[in-house]
Amino acid sequence: MSEELGAFAGQLVEYRRHFHQRPELSLEEHETAAFIERELRSFGFDGIRTGVGKTGILATLAGARPGPVTLLRADMDALPVAELNDAPYKSRTAGVMHACGHDGHMAILLTAARLLRERTAEIPGTLVFCFQPGEEGYAGNKLMIDDGALESPRVDRTVAAHLYSGLDVGKVGVRDGPFFASSDRFEIELIGKGGHGAMPQHAIDPVVGAAHLISLLQSIASREVAPQQPVVVSVGSLQTGTTFNVIPERASLQGTVRTFDDGVRREVPERIERIVAGLAQAMRLEYRFQYHFVYPPTVNDATINNVVRDVAREVVGKNLVDPHETVMWSEDMSFMQEQRPGAYFLIGSRGSQRGAAPQHSAHFDIDERALEVGLNMMVGIALHG
Image (tube, rainbow, N blue to C red; front, side, top):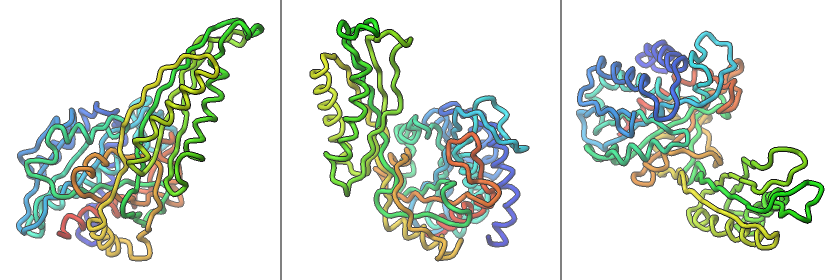
């Protein structure tokens, strides 16, 4: 970290711990947003837009040099997880926790805004600091787009990063093209005829149908999609019955589909329903089927990624810039990257003492040295042009 940025190291940790102690759920980030707005105004920002996408904030900073309009984004929401860490900065809100690193994202971007506000003479173009609500399944990114986040000024490119427990602190993960998978959801209800568990011949059993269906759905990945096109079809919820000796009338399943290819993504609903319909006919069941397209794949622009790589080589060294593999989780920054070229990269947050627990775990934490890497990256990208 440069001497100038190093002076902000304490501020980074202070912000991160403030946010960690005060988590708020998706689209309920009212106190978080109010704190960020107060800090931005104290740095000298004016014309701040609040309530964008319900609770989001946009702050614009015009540089003195010509260049693009670059949006830098941090997500704000926490998860409905009861924290099991015994740290002095643990969550003060029962059942709610920053278990994914968004507290660190906000700390990085807020500190970057403060530092860059003092360096406008060096900034090429215009910066838009985007504090986004509702990333955890609520498509807050799309809500902000719908409220004009990419306009006035018209954004040319986007940049976002994620602290990641799967990478050692001091590493940066970058990948061109599809990086994070799409995330879609399906709901299936199988309807049969209830009866006594000892007399199945008088019933039409949806539980047996559900058991067969879960296995059959795996044939989509193994036999209907080319091996070069990864796809995941997972049933995460099966709800049926009330006691051990009664065949229920209904079985409800919910699941997720992940893929990187838009063509495959669009074909999966028909494939699932064909299997459900065939099984229902074979087992005398009726069915209901719903499919929800939620988050598209996150696709990185190679040109903007080159900027990320250039900065990362300066920040962490060329040997610590990881050409990262694709991952099957999803990210709603994908909506902005559908409309504008963008780069989304990973910042390692796993240390020897802290940061090894996976994202969304009740034990999740970060090695706070990762915050310094994140600040260096965001400031470096903002000044790169």
